[in-house]
Amino acid sequence: MLKTIIVTEETDDRLDNFLSEMFENISRSKFQKLIKSGNVKVNDKPQKASYKVCFKDIIEFEFLESETIEILPENIPLDIVYEDENMLVVNKPSGMLTHPTAQETKGTLVNALLYHYGENLSDINGDLRRGIVHRLDRNTSGLLMVAKNNSAHEFLAQEIKNRNVEKKYIAVVKGNIKDDFGLINEPIGRNPKNPCKMTVVSDGKPSLTGFKVLERFSNCTYVELDLKTGRTHQIRVHMSFINHPVLNDPLYGGTGLKIKTQDQVLQSYKLKFAKPFSGDIINLEIPPDEKFEKVLGWLKGKVKDEN
Image (cartoon, rainbow, N blue to C red; front, top):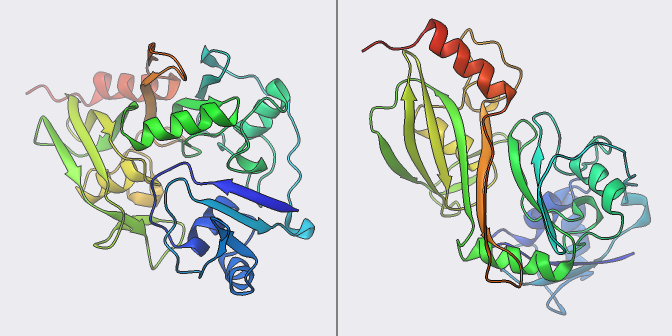
C-alpha cells in the first residue's frame, strides 16, 4: 500500500526518526532499510535516512500490508467544545491516547472520531492520525483541534507554524517558583539514554514556553503556561529543566508529594485561532477539570502558604 505524508509542522528531524515517530508500529531500523533500498521518496526523490525533513515535504513509501494496524470506530462520547464545517475542537479527557499505537489500538480519540465522523476527517498524517492536527499526551487533558478535511488541516498546520494559534495550559508544579512570570528558551530533543523521554540538548529543536504564576502554595505552584512552540513533552521537559516538574509526572520527576491524583496535573485550557478560510477569530476557554479541582481544593484546604 502506497502511503503519502504531507509534513504539516515545522521540523528538522531525520527522515528515519520522523517516520518511526509518525508510524509507531514500524521500528526505526525497518524504516532505515526501506530508505536504503530507495523505496522512500521525498518530493519525488529518494533520500538518505539522515535527510532533514522540512515543512510541506511530501513523503511517499510503500506500506507493507503485514505492518498495517486495523483501526476500528468505537462509540466513545466526544466532548465537543466547537465545531464548524471544516473542523472541531474536542476536550480530551486524561487517560485517553490521542491516536492508536502498535501496542494500543482501542479507546483512543481517533477511534472515537472515526465512529462519529467516518471518512470526514483529514488523512494527511495517515490512518492512525485521522483528523489530528496536533496532539496531547495521554495524561494531559483539554482542548485539541481536529480537521475534517485536508485543506483545513493544511490551513491549521500553517497557522500553528506561523505561531498564530494561541495555546495555553494550566498546571500545578512542584516547588515554589520565585519569579511571577518568565520565558523558558531551551532546545528539546530525544533523550539519548531513554528513547521514551525528551530532554534539553544543545542540538535540539528551538523550544519556547512562557509561564505565569497564578497562585503559590507551600510546596507547589499553580501556573499558566503559554506554549509558543509545539515539541513533544515540551511543557513537561521545560518545567522539569527549571526544577519545577509537573505534579504527578513520574517520567520527569513530578512525584513525591502526598497528593492523590492518577494523572499529571496539566490541562490545555485555552485555544485562540482563526476559523479556516474565514476572518473570524475563535477564542475558547474551559474551566479546570475534575482532576484540577481536587488538587487545588486539597492545596487550598491543607497546605496553602499563609505568607
